[in-house]
Amino acid sequence: MLGNQENYCDMLEEALLKKPKFTKYSFGDESEEEKRFKPDEMPTLTTSLEKAIIESITNAGLANDLSKIKKLYDNILIVGGGFAKISGYDLILNDRINIWRPKFLSTSALDDIIEYVTNEQNKLDQLKKELILQEKHKKKQHLMETSSQQQNIPSNVEDIELDEDVLLQIQNQTNLDIDLDYIDSISEQGQSFSVNVLPPPREFDPEMLTWKGGSVYGRLKVVNEMWITYKDWDLLESRCLSYKSLFNY
Image 1 (cartoon, rainbow, N blue to C red):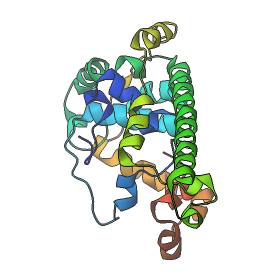
Image 2: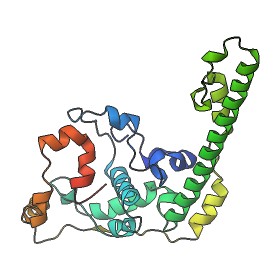
Image 3: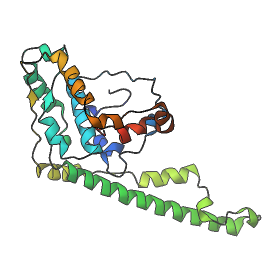
Image 4: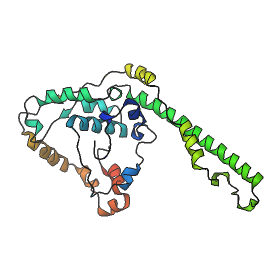
């Protein structure tokens, strides 16, 4: 688990493809969980390093540019005073990423897979709207024929409320059913992303690498435009990170 969310590595293939962030049209929309999240309520991180890396790189690609995924997998560097100081851990991590990374997240055809899933979901969303509108027209017609209080019937069909069982029936009719065999055929057309975990540089202590990077980053002029004020956070909350951050994911 990453926080309170199931990560990509622990999901079944169909569940992974149905994850809201996995479709182009829905990425960037705040989920109900994100809307309820408070800055002072830090989630508990109980996942392994390799799974966290896969989750982070995948989300970075989905949020920005899928072509960046290959570059990120080619440039993984362990820093800090823990794993970075274990001799040979870069080779172990390389193997574990390849073991845990889902097949569909390992291919350069990921963009085509997302395109397919998005199109299928859009078709079902359109069908759902049409079915709901049809049922509302039917209900309005029924009310017009049977109700003695015609003035209470909404003039706009959009204002007609449907029963829960009708909505549930429509939902069942429009559930996304993914053809995994077809997804497999798309996946096989691409190339697998190679993983390259860089060994810690000999000239720097791994514990100091983040501080070194931070000091260089802090000297950039563009950093002055990235400060998030209390007013910014009060107005936009976590969304301001998308507008202010250099790494938008």
